[in-house]
Image 1: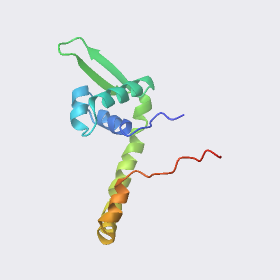
Image 2 (image 1 turned 30 degrees about the vertical axis):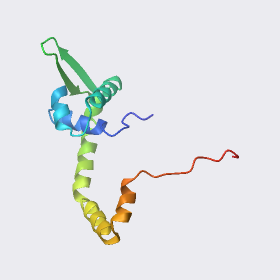
Image 3 (image 1 turned 45 degrees about the horizontal axis):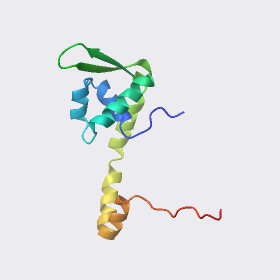
Image 4 (image 1 turned 180 degrees about the vertical axis):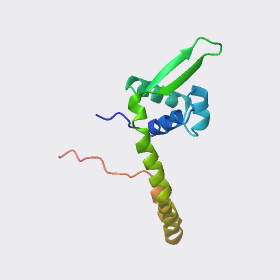
Length: 123
């Protein structure tokens, strides 16, 4: 069973843990996420028991998200991943050095999704 799949869920949980719990704040603090994607991811996190959604009867509507115990138990793991990423930042520097040596033609292949031939009909 996969509960935390996708690009954004761990990022969203990290921001809520950091005290950014309102929908608009999350949208501003997570660059590149579309409003619809944020809504979908938050609904799935709520459905799966990671966050609690509280809507306040105000104009405009105010919605706040808080972590539930299941998500809170993930925070030490996320912190370890963050530390690991900081310690291994050299990977990005090594990749840039490699790409500068082999040239732009190879660099483009890293930016394109892998392609594969469709399965043959005879199988």
